[in-house]
Image (cartoon, rainbow, N blue to C red; front, top):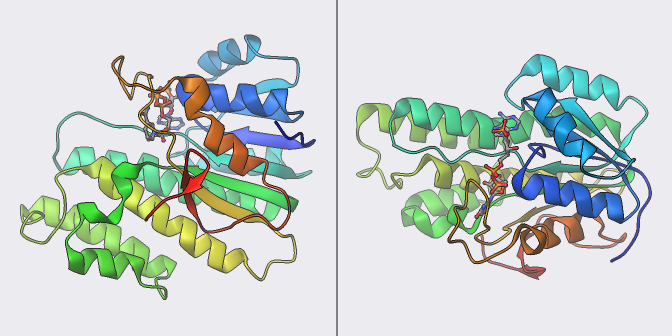
Length: 260
Ligand code: NAP
């Protein structure tokens, strides 16, 4: 594994893939902050890793926690891994709102809060999913979200049009899947492309990419998933440690580029 010094933050890292990403980044030489919405759970997780791992309270849906995170990394951040995510049972407007808030808006607002803190050579990783590939949408919606000119306001509009369609009961007719999780990851992927475009002219040489960890044995993935957390963490960690000149604005699984 390549080594890198510096400071990393992994969101939702008190368990599952996030915890394993934190473990592998620490092993690679970084100091790692485990973001956890339950600080005690974060501390307990950090105590099982090495001396360079600390916990911090970070509910990605909390503006106050995000501001505190920006304060904490006033001296700079080298790696940000947006890993926190939920996959709720059921499908209704409440599930849609909670899922979009955690999986999409959470990652977007955490990234925006920490972008000014990213040091030259910084890396941003979105832990996404193949469930967010655009083939889950109608051709028209797929073309809309893949448009090279898609901006942030367009993306928020896209996501909110899904939430409104679910409220109206027209989402299937309108070309959306009956899965808030899928749409949240479609949006996370689109955000990755937008950020990469925005950062292309940034002098710091920041790289931002999305990863699918595979179907991983965690509480989210379930016990019959074929992939271990150790294997699932490898592609996100590889993207977090990319050397200068590496890809930006891509979507990867098993360290290979995959289709949006
Ligand atoms: P997991 O074991 O359920 O862990 C999810 C983590 O996210 C937990 O630490 C959880 O904290 C945290 N979290 C949830 N909402 C949060 C919030 N609002 N703020 C901060 N942390 C929050 O799931 P996992 O399988 O490791 O999933 C990690 C990521 O991989 C997710 O983004 C998921 O979509 C993605 N992924 C997983 C699979 C899979 O097969 N497992 C496949 C593709 C993608 P609490 O302990 O407080 O709940």
